[in-house]
Length: 368
Image 1 (spheres, rainbow, N blue to C red):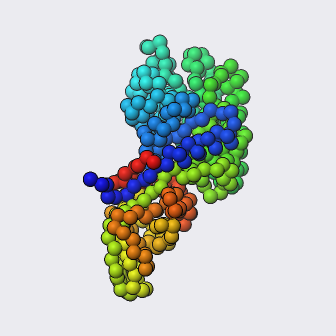
Image 2: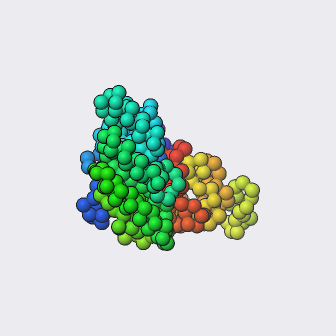
């Protein structure tokens, strides 16, 4: 039985293309590929399996449960978790090579207790908050943290922080955060602590702050071929990994003045062909896009008319007569069709992160 419904085509050749171009740009640095939130909507397992041949790549997720899903799927790469360390994670993390995020004093005390009881310890990175005001040790705790680490022989694998504004045009605050992080590194050196990995760069910093590279780069949105914001210059050539499409399931010939969709906000201004597409906001299509939105079909753009429904939307095809089962493109690049997700995000006042991670519901991911 053929699947009728929204499809997210995942272009693995684009994924590999992006990864290679990022490697070329950053030089001899280790890479952490972020596949949290179901791979930014692309499918964490599918993306990870196609990165698996790059054994040097670290995969990053947010929750410990996300890490377990990757291990159950047979992913062998090192996996790092951004969420706060929990005591119940430690044994499995140790057994399954899942690296943890230590960001409070209670975390490193839990690690000490585990080490004393098991004569082993899962790998972990120290997270310092330099200005995000989220997870992380405060800078004024640094001496206490480093002394405790040294006194208890904990040997963290890495140390890191996270920028709040690295993808913005004004880098004043990002520079301030970077200065604080470098100060932490200097202080850590005074305690004789060494790290395999030091990381602070996200996709925005890769493009905007080369001084923040250190020896490990975290890449998320760039990997998926999307600009992290409209305020950064895209110095790396990338291609969109996802093409989000939906099938035409009905064509209606309607007359001038025909009301379309909920609320009757739109009425046709001519006799036209209205296509009904089986995709709605429950599948991740942003409802606000109906106001100025369009789709691409056979290389041409056609307007979305009326409010996007939970399961469907309507398109004004004018004199064009598409076939039942033909697909329209919502965003991405496939065959002759291309719509940039960045343009949609800017038009409706949201971010590409919100749009991509919303692709779910009945959407079927197809690896091509």
